[in-house]
Length: 179
Image (cartoon, rainbow, N blue to C red; front, side, top):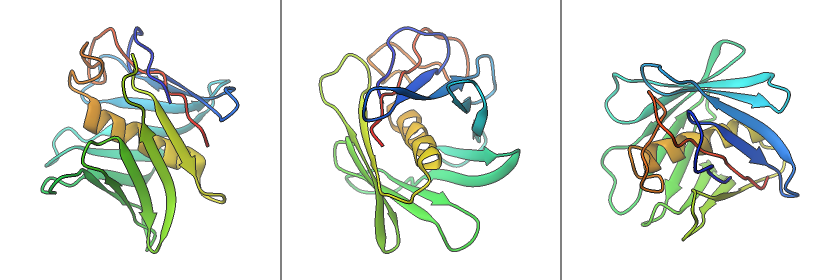
């Protein structure tokens, strides 16, 4: 996933491992909290991401077909790394654990590792490699990757320009992903 340096809103293009455009993430402007539509390249919505503004800590909800599919919440009190709890109805919850630098994340659905995110160092825009285990839900795990990027690298941290998700801005993101 690679962030585009100049765009209106949090807009991302997600590419597959061969460099082909696979998904489009349309960031909504002028919203209260971040809202993004995760779409096919012909603009068919696959899921919708909405920030919970009045939550204790960064919290996002992922919707599919208009129904709540999962809630992604950043744990507030962790030492030396960021951790996200991904609450899926039923016994299938996922934990995304980051490293000390917030550049590496692994997704664990006990007892299995199901995905790995790696943020590249020294790039103009945020660039991620995402490796997803066979048989996993690519769209959902990529949506979770977008949430982690917003929660960990938003609020002016993205390339030093500023963030757009909940309002106006000049920087969004273009994400290049291997899956």
